[in-house]
Length: 102
Image 1 (cartoon, rainbow, N blue to C red):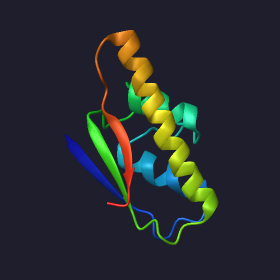
Image 2 (spheres, rainbow, N blue to C red):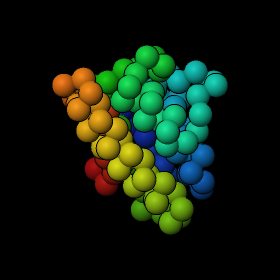
Image 3 (cartoon, helix red, strand yellow):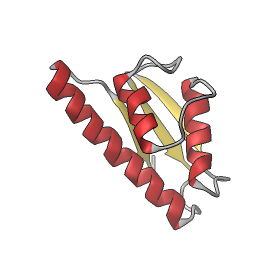
Image 4 (cartoon, rainbow, N blue to C red):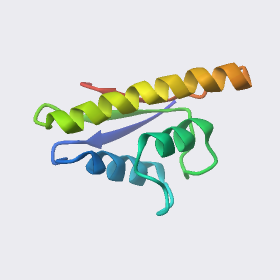
């Protein structure tokens, strides 16, 4: 499984999360910067240059604002729920996940 590392040290808004994440995945410029678009491309696939399986490790989160930390947690939950939906529909897993604190 591929590991993609992101450095969140200088993130100040939730858009910084999406900008870094989508750049690392090779997302097209038109890709939405929200949870629905993220789960569509990361779990359902066919949009980004980098396709699962992968783990995205976000480092440098200690100094982030509550808003950015909350968005990261929302993204983690949304991806987990989308994976469960994918398994229910397709009968197999699609491993795309976010990890923090590693």
